[in-house]
Image (tube, rainbow, N blue to C red):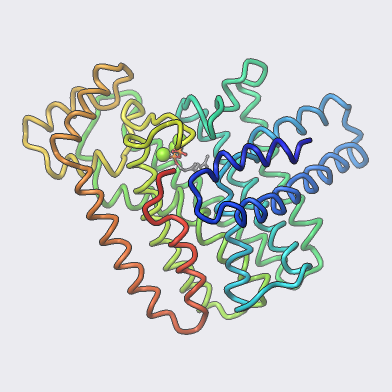
Length: 366
Ligand code: GPP
Ligand code: MG
Ligand code: MG
Ligand code: MG
């Protein structure tokens, strides 16, 4: 029943996919692994920590609500990267291991999103109310985010402790979490909460630092590095190269996220944008400022970061006047060309790893 529910949820998400049948089959196989991991966590809570039934039910529901229903891009990428590195199909055992590591990234993402939605005061996520907005949850969502993080380490321990790369793997997860939290810090402190907005703080440089740290490491590098550990890649130079390319793909991905926050259909995106009223150092506001006349800059100063419909509409209108849609189209094409050139130069590992990651997100609408 759980699987059926997840399948129908996933089918909705895959609605726009070309190879829908293939994708859904792979996704359904992948989703099965999430339920297996959840059962392991519940068994540990019950048998090792003698947790009451009520706590088991809470975790059961919390995991279903927050770990299922996403695009599964990061998780499935571990399998696809491992296939690209193997330059052929994986054994069932290797595939299972890749799926488990994939879910570690998906659960990590759930940890980040549950917390991020509290911090951003967001409304919906993956087509449903954000977890913290459920009346019985509220601030308990903060503890749930911590729990999701702990579950990731528990899964890594259960399935990878005896592997030679275990320490490197765990340290990579720890470092990526730290980097993401630093990015989140820069994101949240772009403007003072207790003073007037200072538009000089919205620079290209700050935006770039935010997006690389808050998104690129965990969204792309972690999937690639996880697959590399699984595939027995040992030389540090390969990890360094993977990081360089993944950071650039991740930068492009978060610019898309910033753009979609304002321009995507919330029904397709699954979330309602809040960047304008949240006073975020979004790619759009940075681009607007670099093109604005002094009068337009004054409009931004007055209306950006104000949580009312009229101010939001004025900012959106200014974005139209400045034709940020065209600026974005050009950015998208230029970034794609630049990334392809960078990937073409990859020598010491299959370049398909990176092409695959890039093709999953090029011109995405959600
Ligand atoms: C995306 O920012 C970044 C994250 C979700 C990382 C959060 C990090 C933490 C340490 C909690 P975003 O707010 O633009 O994402 P979205 O648009 O999905 O809300
Ligand atoms: Mg957010
Ligand atoms: Mg955020
Ligand atoms: Mg966003």
